[in-house]
Length: 304
Image (tube, rainbow, N blue to C red):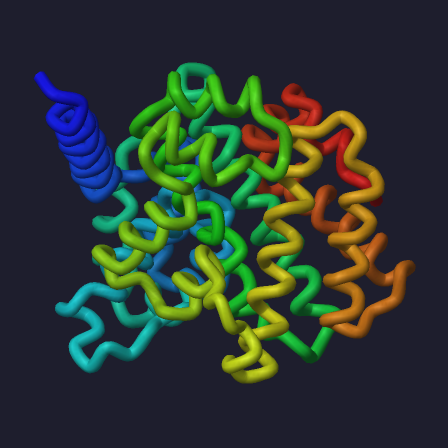
């Protein structure tokens, strides 16, 4: 075999591997915690249930939230390609019975058995909690858009951690933030943002979410509100990964926090209050993920 033939074989092998990973990613069904599933079932069993209460419960679980987004942004429910970002609106459109059926269709997550994926899902939920609190104190971004965008900004990481847990865990244990593109490409064949966008497109997730997963090269072309949201979500995501992957990350976290404060025009005191309140809410609303992230040292490494 010539050197050229050998290079061709390696290239074809990499392409086949990428296709296999993409196929697995597209078939991926994000699981939900039994606790949250039971909570939503109990709410939908009440014929006088408040859609807002159901939405709040759904948004405490990555798997449930993703399931609603995939169904409600499908061609059947969104024939005019109108993006739906509000879980509350999705619940209203579906009705209580169909909402209960959607919840029942989600596989169950056992964090003690799927630590790698559960850890990243927990970080996504904490990111959405922070984004929601920031939206509540600033008029620059809308909470209803910020929450799902922050939750799914790391979709590629969740998918890779789920379909390739061993390889992802090796990267987690050997790499520091920020992970280099070459490391992911070399190890698993995909960059998380690249895979996340491919999956989000296939599932017809809203364009705004896709732009938060992989921001455009020239973000200045976007409307000011979009720029602010993408910068905020990206900074929150990096703050959390920074706390997870680096022991001496204070300086970097402070720089990222400064980006958020500047974009949203909030004070140091207000930002610190948001972070503290978000962590407290996360502990109350997502106790299973809270315990996992605390065990991993992620929450303790966050600057408040």
